[in-house]
Length: 328
Image (cartoon, rainbow, N blue to C red; front, side, top):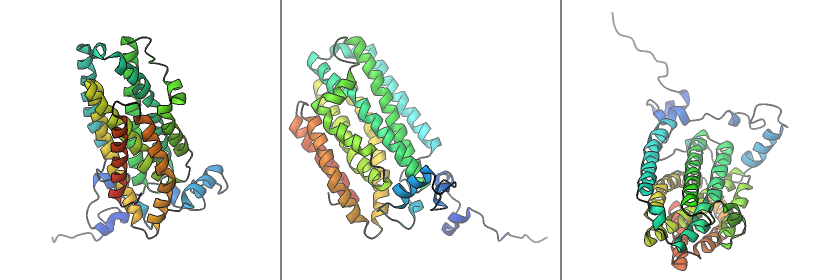
């Protein structure tokens, strides 16, 4: 009996043009949004339902255009399975950092001046980190392609992890330094001059409802500004003052920062391949970059090397955007 072969498809029809079996990443991330099937009723109910009107206004009518948003790929191809394995190892590392420094009595060795700095500049950081979490969740909900949603969800999860770790450290510091202001972070976030730039920046980001502007505001300005000032520069100051725990925690956080930058940069480059989008992105950045740089200046001012820290942070955010192809 002679062997026969089937002429039927051996893969998903949408991915058949690649003439290969889809990767695990493609299988669980590609073209999963039902809300892109009917532009008049994204949520497949009455076209005049609130959520349909919202999506049509803030996604379908946005300025950034592309023929195939689904063609975007996360450079790291992160999926739930790989994310949980990767971050399980990261969480174990952070747990060991915390346990070892607690065993050594680390918090008791910190100077009163640095403790005051931590109460002012470190522990209130759970507020902007939570804003990153909320903004990432909105981006995930509104993104016009499931590959974008997939990446934004893990950015949201990263932010949640660091909100939790910052809250944990707040309790540790409050236990070892009662009366130093730990636990009163809301008042610092709302009133201290060091935080008002970031408070304005994130409040504006959270009400940038058009998905394209939200992407640019969060991924190219607000999050990079916070990452460079609060994570990198505060971490450097911690290392210089002998706070090895905060320095190492922030180093660990920077691993998540770099991964987030890779997918945000890849998505913006994907958008810039469409004619006319560079001007749209630059027009948005002209509005948002000054807010980000003012936030960096205000936050870095109380650091021991405030002017240099601010200059380095702003230079890093500019280099990040320039590397993508933006002009601001």
